Amino acid sequence: MMRLSYWVFPIIAGLVWLGMLLGLLLHWVIDTHSEHYPSMSANQHIAYISDVGAQELKPLFIVGCVLTTVLLDTSFLSDRWLRHRGRLVPNSTRGEKILSGLTIFCALIGTVGLILLSIFDTARHPRLHDLFLGFFIVGYLFSAIFVCWEYQRLGIRHPEHNILAVSFWIKLAFVLVTIALAIPFVVLTRYQIYNPAAVLEWIIALVFSFYVFSFYVDLYPAMDTKRGGNYRTRTWNARHQAHKPEEGASDRSMPHTHRRDLEDDAGLPSNF
Image (cartoon, rainbow, N blue to C red):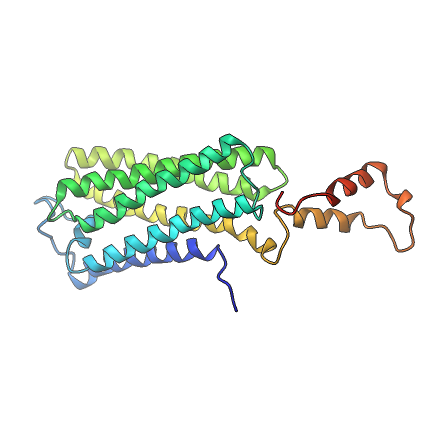
């Protein structure tokens, strides 16, 4: 029986999110010919995502938000589980475990915010909608900050796993870009400069999709341990192959330090 790989979760989540955004945007531009919705201000000509999602495509908006957040949270939980099992580089210090927990907790706040803002739409519940929008942005932004911090600590302790540094820089870029876009978005909305604010909202939503996809980078290395072994298996085997003695050669021909490494690694527990 074929088993679903963990890296599939962020890929599906990102595709669902992008598909929802594209569906809403094309519907507003093509089907409605850029209709001016009742929830839009008189001088507003560009619809917010929420303006489009509050109309006839509200079911698509709700389903897209629910599926995206549930699958993304599943990615967070999968990452934590795989590190706990030793199939990915584990959180072996208290600080790393706390950061991992904070990442999941803040992601859950963002999840609640995104689901509820899609239900309490801007046309019928504008104040609640804005409140839950804040939950969504702040929740996932802090979640990204904590996961960056976690991977930075993991990367320092495990420099041989370059994927940790790659993931750290991707997520740090998301944090910096989101902050750079969110600040003018809030300011423009506060001063009722809605058209550029609406453009920024669509851009922030697009950037969020790349953040979702980035968890593929974190979960894919677990493929190397899908049939057994632990996060060190690949590196450990490669080192053995590189120093494997020729057939018939004496073990004494191996450098003393390397023999000691082999002896140490031979006793490596499977869940290290």
